[in-house]
Image (cartoon, rainbow, N blue to C red; front, side):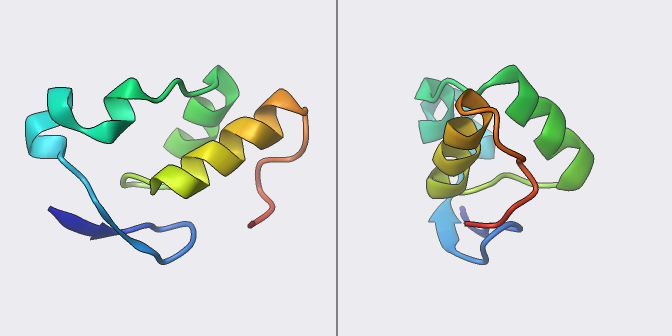
Length: 67
């Protein structure tokens, strides 16, 4: 299913109906990022946004800054 990332507006493929085969299942997500996404967004984020948020979390930078 094509979705629009609520963080950056990019269109991406999401397989939430077949979650075990979705790209996000092979992506390690920092616990701080999980908490942030749960509080800020209602849907899935694109791979690039997840990677950026993971990078910011590892560097202990604020997660609320857009790319």
